[in-house]
Amino acid sequence: MDGLTDALSFIGGFALGFLGGLLPGLHSNTMISVLASLGLDGRALGIMIISLFPAHLVSSYIPSIFFGVPESGTVMATLPGQRMVQRGEGVKALRTVLLSCALSALVSCALFSASLALFPPVYEAMRPHMRFILLGISALLLLRTKAPFLSAAIFALAGILGHLSLNSGMPDPFLPLFCGMFAMAAMTGWKKGAAPMQEDLPPENSIIWFTIIGVLLGFAADLVPGVGSPSQTAVFATMLMRMDTPGYLAMISSISVSQAVFSLSTSASIGKSRVGATAWLSETMDICANIPILLALFIASIALAAMLAHAFRIHAAKLASLDFSSLRFVLAAYLVAVAFIIDGWIGIVVLAASAALGKLTLGLEVERTNLMGAIIVPTLMLLFGIFI
Image (tube, rainbow, N blue to C red; front, side, top):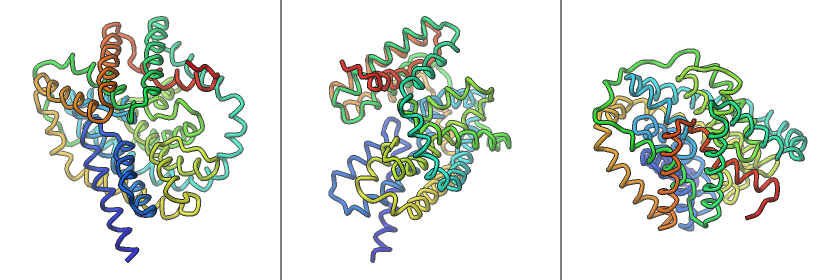
């Protein structure tokens, strides 16, 4: 009976995660928090979490690529994904992400035992210097831009907004924050007309190397607070190496998957959960005692989600054929409704403020990567003991 219950829990979590990822703005943490409130058995809830999160991670790239509506993990995938859609390569972008997700899950699991041994000593060596490491990374992020002073201003404004949002008591502060800065701001520039026909092109072989690099970056990012999101980590990677658009997509998706896998390791070895789903999981079961089954279920969920998304890739690409100029009003209304349902009136205020900041960023022609100050600045304030 336990086997049947486990199977049903896996199927249920997978279905919820995959379908939830197709709805722009619906974060996996929000779905997990709802499940946690239902009073489910601890083991059943744990299995649902470990199957829901990977499935959601994979399917959330579909609206990110074809609609340009991101969540915190796919924010920076929106830009290159949309560029490929406008070139008729949206299916290639999706296939690149799916292959990278599957490969990075396997590579991360292969390195899992090594991560358990490496995380404790590396973390202890970095911990006394963590605030200066993050400060240095932030400085590099700003200095690499074309207009450092304008970038610093946007970075600071995003940080203030992020600090207020994160301390507002909203159930999901990232939803209005990122949807406003990236999706709502970008929608104002959508013009009449649809994207060209999307060709069913295969991914390039070179993405394998970017996937491996992404896994290593995901490993490192799990040790540094404030730069834990895949979007931020990928931005910092562009400072060190050049990559084409498919390579960037492969890197950001592999960072997402590897961070999720290695977050199980950090939770088991140093007691730190950099990923929300892992934090929830640690409250329902002993992660350290269940590592083999958790990794197996994670890989199974990633593989099933990738195969399902690949099977329906042509249907997903038809989303790009819609007239964005009229569709933007529907999507904007949807995001406003979701923000209100989840975060109430405060969510609407944050959504409006972040959309205005995103629009200002576009108007000043400043790199939108500076908006990631919304996470970095609050983390720096915490590390330096600045409480406002």
